[in-house]
Image (cartoon, rainbow, N blue to C red; front, side, top):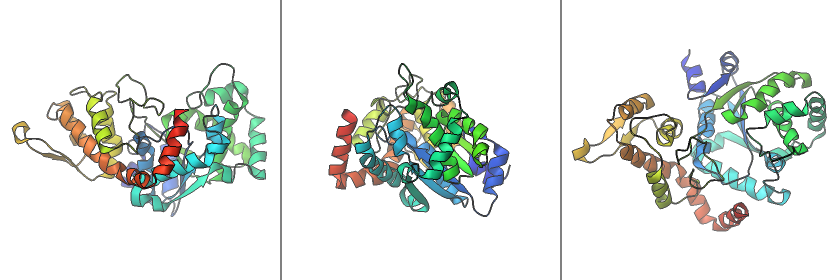
Length: 337
C-alpha cells in the first residue's frame, strides 16, 4: 500500500472500494465531498469525517462540504424551511471553526442551491421509478428518524443523497458508517443516470461518552460535547466520561484520541506529576494505545490530555460564537423546541 493510499483510508471503518479510491487519488486532481444535514447541535464527533477531509485535501483533492438543508427537513421535519438558513449558517461556522485554516480549501454548498434544478429533479424521478419503497426505507433506516408508518420524505431522503454524488462530481465520498446503506444503493443505481458508481470512505462513529455502547448523539447532552461548550464544561463532561482502564473497546476517550486528536497533531503530550512518572510524549496513536492497554497510562491522564486538546481544537468555533452570541442564542432556542 502506498503512503498516499494509506493516508487516504487511515482510520476508515470501511472503504468501497480500496482499488477505486486508489485510482481516484492518483489523478492529478480529484473531487471529494462530505454532506451533513443541519438538524441538531453540532458536536465534536463531526471532527472524525472532517479530519478525513483535511487529509484528502492535503493529497491534492478538491473538496466540497454540503450543508444538506433540504435533507434536514426530509428527516421527519427536524428543521423547518424557516430555520434552514439559520441552522446552515450555524453548521458552516462550526465547521469552519473546528477545521481552522483548512476550511479555506473547501467549497461550502447548500443543498437547496441546486437540488431543485430541472436536471436534478428529472434524475430524481428516474431513480425513484427504479427503487422500491422497502429498499428506500431500508437504505435510510440508520439515518432518518422513522416512527410508525413511513413518510414519503423518508423515502426521498436517500435518493437525493445518492444524486449528490453525481451533481457534486465526486470521485470519492466521505461519510459516517451509518450512511453505508444509502451509498450502497447508490452504487446500484447511479449508472442508470449516467454516472459512475462512486467510491466511498466510511468513517467510524464515536461511542457515547456515557459508555452505554450507543453512538454519540446530538439529542443526548450527556453523550457528547458541543463545539461551543466552555472549557469548564468540556473538562467536567470528559471527567465523567466512560474510560475503562486498559480497555479500548467502546472507549470514547481512547477513540477520541485516535480519530480526533492524533489526525490533527503530529504528536501528543500526556502531562503527569513526577510521582506518577512525569510527562510522556507519543508520536503515533499505536504507541499511545499500547501504553494505555499495558496500564502505563492511567484513564484520568488520558482524560486530561483529551480535555486539553479538545479545548484547543474547538476554541476557534467557540470564540466565533462568543463574539456572535445573538446567533448562538437564537440557534439554541430552536434546539430546545
